[in-house]
Amino acid sequence: MSDGNGIMNVNVIEAGLRATALRSKVVANNVANINTPGFKRHAVRFEQLLAKQLESGRPLDVDDLLGQVFRPLNTVVEPNGNDVSIDVEVGEMVENGAMHKTYVRLLAKKYRQMALAMQT
Image (cartoon, rainbow, N blue to C red; front, top):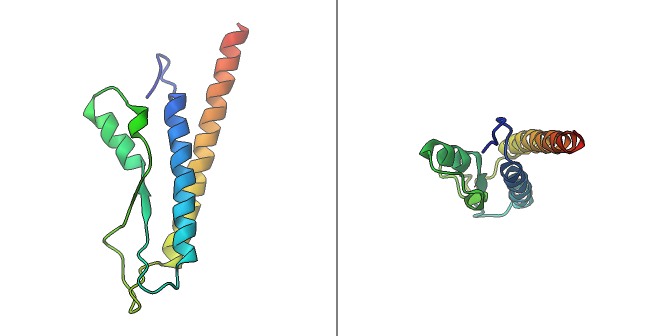
């Protein structure tokens, strides 16, 4: 995950950006189907997969760091069979936006560091 200087690997940051893009699409789909009878919300698992890989002690395989779409089983189902909550989805959007911004800032910092290293 990091190089010799403890700086996060660009590939991991890019994987995080891909996961936030996927999460945005999934949340948008959930919101679009908020009134669809029988629709079950979906979510994206990425940070948990990254943590699991890091805890394993094995070398990090960025190809395995794709966001995983899944259906949460702990949601409240309305009488029409739909379990989408606008409050949950707005919370997901806000959190995902913050994560996306963090990954963008980390990537910009990494590229600045690389540019400085090439100048010296």
